[in-house]
Amino acid sequence: MDPSKLKKSPKKGKNKSNVRTLVFAVVIGLFLLFALNGFSQPDELTEVSLSDVVERANNGEISKIEITENDLKITKIGDEEATEKSIKEAGSTIYEQGLKEEATDKGLVLKVSKPDTSGQVLSAWAQVLVPMFLIGFFLFWMMRSAQGQGNQALSFGRSKARLYGNEKDKVAFKDIAGSNEAKEDLEEVVDFLKSPKKYEGVGARIPKGILLVGPPGTGKTMLARAVAGEANVPFFSISGSEFVEMFVGVGASRVRDLFGKAKKNAPCIIFVDEIDAVGRRRGSGMGGGHDEREQTLNQILVEMDGFEQGQNVIVLAATNRADVLDPALLRPGRFDRRVNVSLPDRNDRKAILDVHYKKKPLEKHVDLESLAAKSAGSSGADLANIANESAIVAAKHNRKTITQDDVTEAFEKVAIGPERKSKIMSDAEKELTAYHEAGHALVGHVLPDSDPIHKVTIIPRGGTGGVTWSIPPEDKSYHSIIEYNDVLARLLGGRIAEELIYGMNGVTTGAGSDLPKAAELAREMIVNQGMGKKLRNQVFHTEDGMVMDRMMHERQYSEQTAKMIDDEVEELISEAARRAKEVIKHNMKKLTELKDALLEKETIDSKEVETILKGSVLPKPAVQTR
Image 1: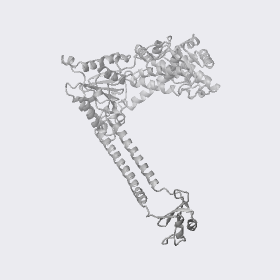
Image 2: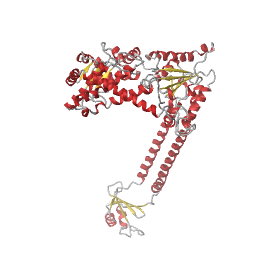
Image 3: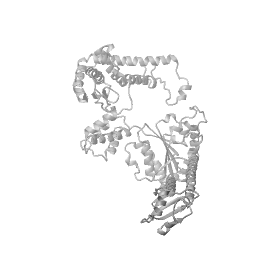
Image 4: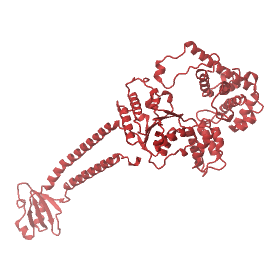
């Protein structure tokens, strides 16, 4: 079925109609008010005394007097209309006030008229009807609004899924670089939707549900959009958080509505992003089995397992927390297939960079291969951000093309934060920062299993006063105890350099970000990787994310074991500090040279570090002992 043929909600048309009605009512009200104002307009006649009117009438200076009860309107000789007015005494005639009968012989015309009360009647009616009309319209508008809110309340149970598949800028698999294994799995889904009989003919059943699992920014949602673009079928997209509302039963109702729409428009795809918002393991919340989220999950389980054969409805879901999902959701028959979307390797990063720079004016000498090598551990979203930042840097410098310097600046900005050149540091602070960063760089350079130093700077970046940046020469899937020990020593190199130069009482808070990283790495080695001496090959991992589990379940080891873990962590950090101290003590001259270079240039790259630290030695006490 063509998604473009699905009926769209007339909500916008209703809103426009309500606005037109409101404007029309306001115009009518204003017209009535103007009309009322017209009826009550005061005349502009000049008021004169009655004695003066009578005297001039007797002298033949007045051509006409119009009498309406006690009001007089006077028209002078030569005027066509009345220009004056006066008032006579009630109960008497104008003759009794002194007008002579001979005045009529001189051309005076007396006209007696009955009072016209039509204007007063209309004015009185307007004063009553206009407020009533406005009040009535206001009540009508309030009732319409209340009715609309009532309809909205009744529509809470309807799915908020958005329909894709008919947009102009469709995403295809060729538009997505990397993730080749994931694309192969999803291409089978597309092929089934296009040619279901080919699979049914050999007794094959396409997976009912496919779970996309991977770190944030690896392109899970983009892959789902590519499936929609390739299959050319209706594609309903919704976030897991959109199922749950404050009203009980709304989430389950929306699930039923969503799957009902999908079955009517089969073959089609349902994509649930961040499914862990409703798919978390049951029994872990405060509400037991009766809270709204778990009712929603129960309805999802029923709907997925209740698909009829031949419906050709496939559920795609994405999450970066598959470990917290309910086991019943992951079993075959619901999510039969799990597609891992991992961080891109070097070749994939190069392909992703090519895609993002394809439509940008890039200079020919820009080396994206080196950028792909340096950006190990970056996700596709990180690489897209680097490409965008490089274009912003080029535009900021009024360049029409993106240069290598722009790409480098963007990469460093994304990786370690922007430079804070406006921060003013005293000479003493600069020297201390230079010694601190030189300590990191010296230890990282001398220890053989530490990652090479890429750049050292004493210019504040992000939330740090300076940065020593190490980049692995190649992508690694595994790390050894020796590598971790060298990383610990490098992390402590800055604090140890301060201690050796300024004494124990001269150390500062400059290692405020280094020490937590070292403690976290050491605990990771002991608790999760089994790299302790006494606790070798034993792990004590606690499940992340399940708050109630951590609160309600006892840990799986004793207080004595916890004390041993703390002792092992302390020993790792103490040994790393000892090794860093031995390296710096035996290379104090190189430490000073590196410090001087940093004070002079503020930033030095890997080649300059290699040149300055050439000839530094690895002392025997700093050799690995584990």
